[in-house]
Amino acid sequence: MDLNLKNKTAFISGSTSGIGYTTAKILLQEGMKVYINGRSQKNLKKSLDQLKKDVKGANVYGIKADFLDQKDVHKIVNKLEEVDVLINNVGIYTSKSFFETGIEIWEDQFYVNIMSGVTLCKHYLKGMINRNWGRIIFISSECSYIVPSDMISYSATKSAIHAVSRGISHMTKGTGVTSNVIVPGSTLSNGAEKFISEKAKSENKSAREIETNFFRNERQNSLLERFATTEEVANTIAYLCSPNSSATNGSVIKVDGGSSGGIF
Ligand SMILES: NC(=O)c1ccc[n+]([C@@H]2O[C@H](COP(=O)([O-])OP(=O)(O)OC[C@H]3O[C@@H](n4cnc5c(N)ncnc54)[C@H](OP(=O)(O)O)[C@@H]3O)[C@@H](O)[C@H]2O)c1
Image (tube, rainbow, N blue to C red; front, side):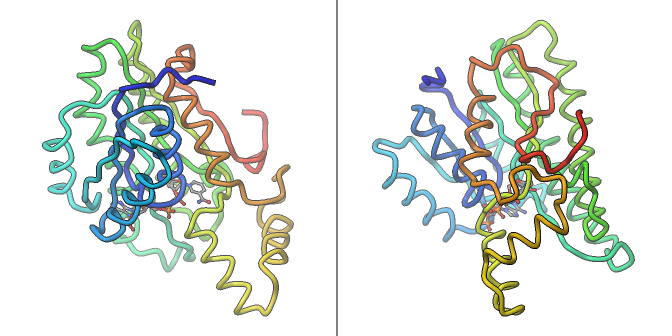
């Protein structure tokens, strides 16, 4: 399917690996100009080189910025004046008991998971509205529904971005701009792969056994009963970036294999 995205510009936060990286690859294949982001120049170079190798003629650039540092966020908007598509993908988490989760962890997750998108939207939304076209996508998590007891702070920040996105969508009324949330389930990003292989090693089990037990014990509502690939999530993100998704605004789209349960 042609997503009608040729020559449009996208910025994807936290995209040197995982869901963000795969989304960048799909959008480049669609002929977009894509800006990827991460904290490390080395990772950025590696990802830019790989994308240029994988996608012939890729129009891809990197912006090094750490969303824990507001000064860095301003660097992004100084370097990149306008975008057609903004994907607020960056997200950090910890797996710790509620009692061990200190205020600094809550604050870091608040800044990276919520304020990254808020700050970028404050800059890019006006231009989108003036040009009467734009796409804003927030990447949430199944955890905003499940709220695992070792990830309460992360889950709270992910729930909060649903409110931010819905609020922003109200400001787009009558325009060609949309703001939506994607809810991935457990997805085989580099971080998840590392988690599985370390757990397999420490418990002397195969990666397959670890995955089966995870879905049996911790994601009982999952209908997929496996980790999604980053492509499975990124395909839905790419569709929401497209003009083809014009009637979807203020929405929450789950790509969680059923894991968050319920009917909403
Ligand atoms: N994977 C899952 O199972 C899953 C499930 C549900 C939701 N999600 C959500 O999906 C999004 C993407 O997750 P992922 O698992 O695909 O990510 P990932 O593979 O862990 O990638 C993280 C990316 O974010 C960058 N990053 C981390 N902290 C940053 C910061 N402070 N400032 C700028 N960049 C930063 C990293 O780049 P550098 O290291 O180069 O800085 C890297 O490019 C997140 O919002 C996550 O919460 C993931």
